[in-house]
Length: 343
Image (tube, rainbow, N blue to C red; front, side):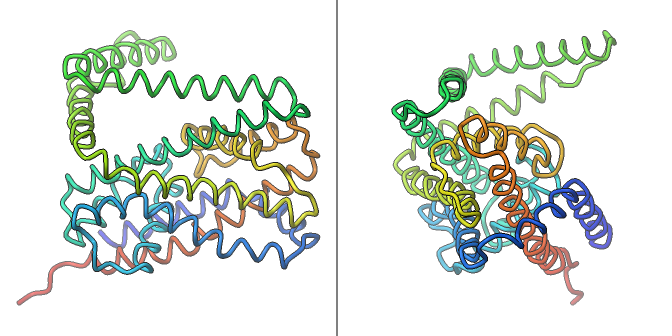
């Protein structure tokens, strides 16, 4: 089984490189014209980014009395493993959650606590991103040089996210409303699939399975609500994580000889992240870069600078995830995937 898992993972790496092949060639040409000494800042930023990403989960688990003896290096490598799995198996983050639940189980963390911790990570990450996004919209609105369409799109994004948060909280607060939400989601998703496939018998979702999933989310919500004071640390780490991710793009533009306002970069990063979450290509390759470049260009950034900065940043980030993340992932598969020794 370990052999098949390793082979499948290797093939997925080839797939990731295939989708990024044009970016790799273009980025290599651009790197030769950049200030390498400034670009070196990427190394600590990337490491700090993945450490903060992991701390959104591990800080919550430590508050629960778990993983207190786990070192910083182990936490960093686990974060890289999770991000590697999410990029190699694009599934909206589900593959990373499943892998990390398995990985944490080898360290004595039960599946229920691992799942709750990862839900906290998602909530904290979304909350911190939303706060920074709202602040960025205010910043670019005050800045009179920004295109009004950019302000409109940014405001629409924040408003949509606010409405989505309110709707989610409304439904998960009540068990009855949770059942209703499962019914509505099943109904409308299956209706859309039947319309697209022109087959009246097609059913993508099973109502009972969707209802069971929503009930689990409802229970997780109640668990987190009872421990809401433990959300502050993951939330603050989320602020650090998003800020560092945005700073990597700012550093790339700086290495090209141009300072770019972090506020539009954050908004472009937000739109691109949503695309990466939805698009089926590994890491959202293609749509992610196109959205970032388009938004930054509309914000007033020179198109050539926007393309160069985004491509170089993305390639460097992906290379760390693919190369370093794969090495750590493979080591974990070999270590924990072995059969129990015979006595």
